Image (cartoon, rainbow, N blue to C red; front, side, top):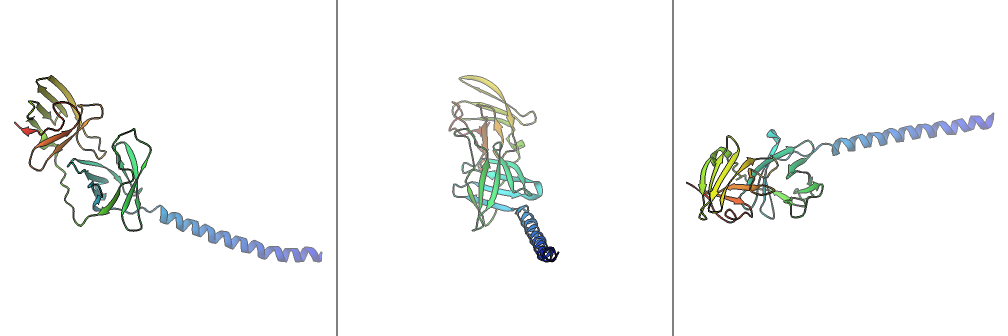
Length: 216
């Protein structure tokens, strides 16, 4: 009987100590989870070493991306998750010790597919991205190779004629940061409206590649 009494006396403090320790640990885990689940809300314009610019618009749940070539596109920005969507993939926005943002892609793209994986953006002093209205592209355009391109923005269709023949296609914007695309090739061709009012098209298609289109 004496042994049992002493065993219980030793056992109760141990149990109390374990319960207190568990409560403290659970509290620590709860605080850590709360901090980790709170994403940093980015705002303003940022730029990476390659000249890509990104403008965060948290109130619109969107971002605007401008590439060094001048292509501008809009995509989804989920501030509470700290993620953006670009070219069919989700990217995590990771804050570095120096305050920069490192982009990490979820998933592996096909070879040579456009990617922002590993890009590091730093905040710019001021925003200079100007997202144009695609309605301003409506009408007929021509280049020095004799290609005449007509864009019907209301119907999101395009038609072109040249010495090689004629063709029709569709216009689309997947809201994935790549901007307005024209179905000239398998992946679509990006349309770039330049500051001087001319237009270029990112494609390998003969008659379009490396040329400048002006309004007719």
